[in-house]
Length: 247
Image 1 (tube, rainbow, N blue to C red):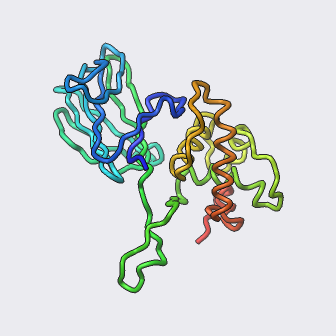
Image 2 (image 1 turned 60 degrees about the vertical axis):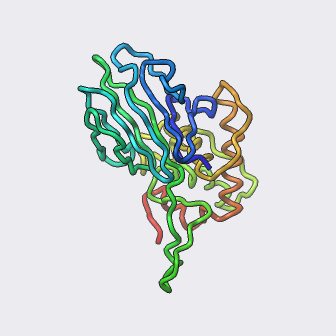
């Protein structure tokens, strides 16, 4: 499984993701290629340094190096109610613990961003290891406090509610269903989370396509099928869609 996935555009299709194995390094900046011939995320803006920084994949987290001599970079947790870290000019290997992160680069009169996912954030089984032995890592580690779980619950709700062959909700229907607990939800955010779920659940990506729309339907079906097969969402957990958390 890939350790770190960089999503440089809102589309988030697999053709636009940059996937890094543990130990791999991705440079980013205005230059189209790195001096050492390594991988590069090009940010074509005159306010971004040619070699602005580097991302290094390190298992369940990643590090950010800031090559700028003057600009501080900010890494935001989009689900953290303002949670963020600052990476000072010249800082090497600053660890980033967020499962989702948004890197913010000051560029002239703009703030440029790209997203970084760390889908290998694992969560141990709380019922395992109570005898003092090693805990058991879950096969499909899901954090039920994250928005991606809300999206997964909304996707699975029709079939968990007694209609096993019900059509899956459309993106617009999911947006409306999530309004009570996520008022700011929109089509792009829902699609972003579905794409992340496909990575998180280790599903094989569909064939490459430049168009994000048609690929999404097959991805939703795959996500729901796997989630229901392995009870990743249960009927008694659907209360999260109304703000009711279950133990």
